[in-house]
Length: 100
Image (tube, rainbow, N blue to C red; front, side, top):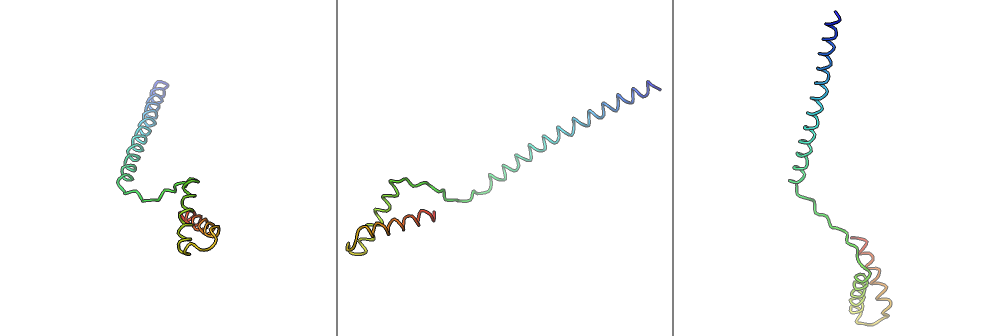
């Protein structure tokens, strides 16, 4: 009887080891193919166009305010206080940069 039990135990261990290894290998292969399929599907769809927020340098901001102040002064026939035109231009540019 002991010979049959040991032979049966060895056979059971072999089956258990075979079962543990086989499904694990299949799952890994299945995950890799699924990941490849997902990335391929993502690449096929056109990317949504998004405006990238670009940081405006201090020099660029100054130039924008300068131009806006000029056009405000021109609209007022170059009469009035230049400081007022500049202040209005700063508010306009700040609002435009926040909207982006």
